[in-house]
Amino acid sequence: MKGTNLGEFEELVLLTVAALVNDAYSVAICDELSDHTGRSVKLGVVHAVLNRLEEKGLVKSELGEATKARGGKRKRFYELTMQGKTALLNAKSMRDQLWARIPALAWKNV
Image 1 (cartoon, rainbow, N blue to C red):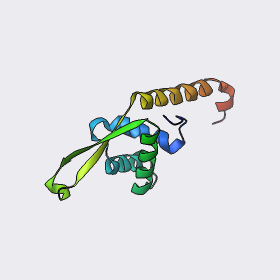
Image 2 (cartoon, rainbow, N blue to C red):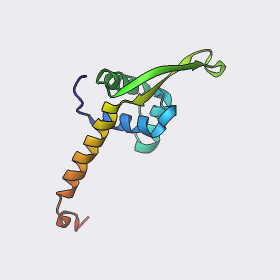
Image 3 (cartoon, one colour):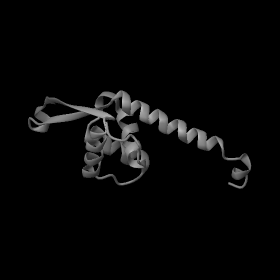
Image 4 (cartoon, helix red, strand yellow):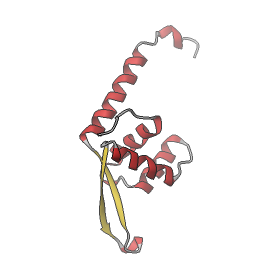
């Protein structure tokens, strides 16, 4: 398994795969990210990140059944591996620890 350090967008894609559960395919991931981040998300970028996450062992994929609605094409569905779940939990833990270190006074005038 390659390194499990996550970039910001990799983390967002992993979180989206987790949230979509059994419906995590590239177009749905792209749409969900656009909806929740308010950013324009390109399908090609999502594909590249999913490939990288799969190389790192953080997600795995399999082809679904062919459908008439897709002209006989099959969707590739993604799911988190145990390493992916661990990487997300570690990222959350690290962020929570850093947030906890910020003194309350730092937020006083916000």
